[in-house]
Length: 320
Image (cartoon, rainbow, N blue to C red; front, top):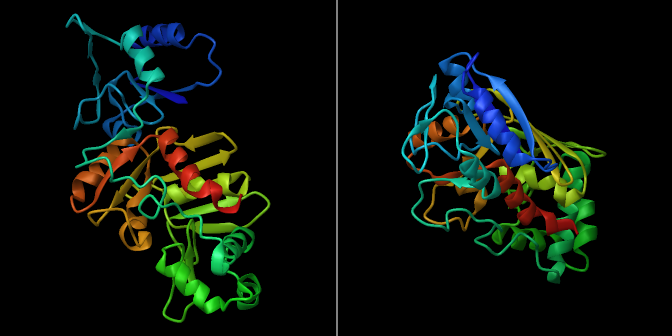
């Protein structure tokens, strides 16, 4: 878990917040804290500061009211007794850290996020009829070269079945995508065409990824360190995430993921209804602003830990 403290220069309430954080965190080694001075409204928007001081838990402000705008003004917190205070209480901080908000969303129901892929059916291809062998051959090729496999590799993986028929069945099941000539254009999490998300795989290739969640699942799938590079769709500000085992370093550390889709359900094909609407944002504020400007997209904002968990759940089992 990562905490981010945001404050204007010489904020008089930062010391109080730090004192209370010390009491809450004690000697916990699983929590890291970074601190940033925010000088103007633009910086407050980029970093997700709702007044000074603000504390983010894995990129999400647990104390912000829905629609609360970015601000560099003095922030007051109200506790059970109703009196304003310059920082969250020890009790409220402890609760926010022990039970973090993983999803911040105004959604019609709980089924908007498909945490397994393919409408909850998962992305592990069936073992029969050469499906899993061909699927895994495609994934390994992307990981090693950044490109789909050649025809000889596909034919060898499909034997004794016809590779064209196997690919068609995989495409029908939304395990991968084909063009009109039957060539692989995507094998989730990888894309053969350029996308806003790239993954540099340690010991492997640099590959394009279908979406932010897909990119976050690659390290678990390959058991390798992965450097993800992307950008905030609203501001163009660069974003990077380094995933290595159970740890991840997010830059900026206020980054969140918006996961959305345009259809009434998440059942796919994912490339058409989901992938272009699952992106990294530099802060909760920029993600919420993008979502407000795109009412045709249903979805929500995921914390860093939740987005990483979803990526691991979907793609972790594919090659294991």
